[in-house]
Amino acid sequence: NDFVILPSHIYFAADDVVLDTRVSRRIRLKAPLVSSPMDTVTEHTMAINMALAGGIGMIHYNNEINEQKKQVEVVKRFENGFITDPKTLSPDDTVRDARAIKQRFGFSGIPITASGKMGSKLLGIITNRDIEFVRHSATPLRDVMTTELITAREGCTLEEAYAALKESKKGKLPIVNTAGELVGLVARTDIIKNKDYPQSSKDSGGKRLLCGAAIGTRQEDRDRLDALVGVGLDVVVLDSSQGDSTFQADMIRYVKNKYPNLDVIAGNVVTQNQAYHLIKAGADGLRIGMGSGSICTTQEVMACGRPQATAVNRVSKLAREFDVPTIADGGVSSIGHIIKGLCAGASCVMMGSMLAATEESPGDYFYKDGARLKKYRGMGSLEAMRKGSAVRYFAEDERIRVAQGVSGAVADKGSVKLYLPYLIKGVKHGLQDIGVTSVAEAHDFMWSGKMRFQLRSPAAQLEGNVHSLYTYEKSGM
Image (cartoon, rainbow, N blue to C red; front, side, top):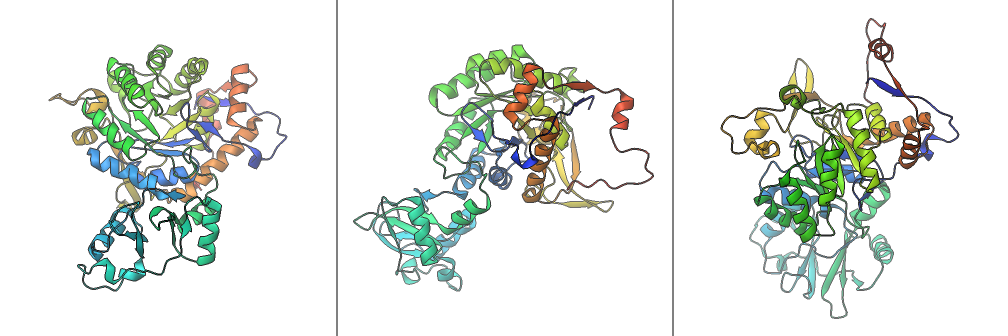
């Protein structure tokens, strides 16, 4: 808050501002927004909505391997285009099996094949209507499945498959080969999602939503990595409050050797020396920030860290030389902070408290003094460390733990379905005022010296905020 950016000439509309950016070397986004891998911020619901809005969600690892794997799997299955590995059942499976798939993955329309697997003869399909009023869960699917099917042949284009779905008015379109064996599936809901979310972040195939996840640097995190890659993880975050360690460098090298096409985001760092070590180890992206988050006490307790704007600028300057994107992580609590992070050199900003207490964040709402709240805690809080995040602070084996974060509560913000478009619109207006048409141009302006920053005294900061009112209301949207 101790500086502002000077305005420049406007010659374009806010809607003309392009927010395309990179979160890592190979992963491009339509919006420079990333949700933090915290257990009160990002699980599959948040990650799905972040990707639909053009950003990306990083799923936390304060859980068992299978639980994190399940979270990533739900995201990757949400929007598929051609679904090449749909859940299938056999005629001998029961209504109970079909209901279990629906409960776990949130969809029905399950193909029934002779063997219950892909590549087998397609015999029918099970929909909600087929099993909704079946009283006995042990009823074989052969007795209730729909056998009159509309299918498409292997080799058809996605557009042709969508056209067939529209004409048939069915929910799912099985794709079969000349022998009538199931080779794929197309879902009607994907057509709707593509129409409603044209800016969504998708993988290189253009079919599935992007999803990231965090891991640590322990030996067992290598098993966690294998499980996540197995369900389609797009980018992995090595999560540590102080990333410049031999543990993280070794983990970067391990990941890049075993999965050379998987981008690795390393950190956290605040100095050029820290960043250089991780870049040389093979990092594809960097998280910048140490002790600047609203629930982080590292600078207070450990006397270690750096003011966030300076950290972002200095680290981004070095990372730019190696074509490594950076993420401003910490201290982001407003649209203005997002804009400042981007204009200081970051390619994206990572949000924690800004997304906590939305409907899509983990946890339940509760009321205190008439306010609707959700719990929000730092991963360095004792509460989170007891659950497993102590590894992030190299304290998993210590009997006495020193907290580097707190637990608190954040006021309800509603749904990110409304909140994220609001943030994106605000960032576009901010860049318009600065006179730049894109994130890339903002970086060019900043590094060339065309963008001007003005330091603010305490009096100027007070003047630049709401003041001289007896009462006022400040709405987020």
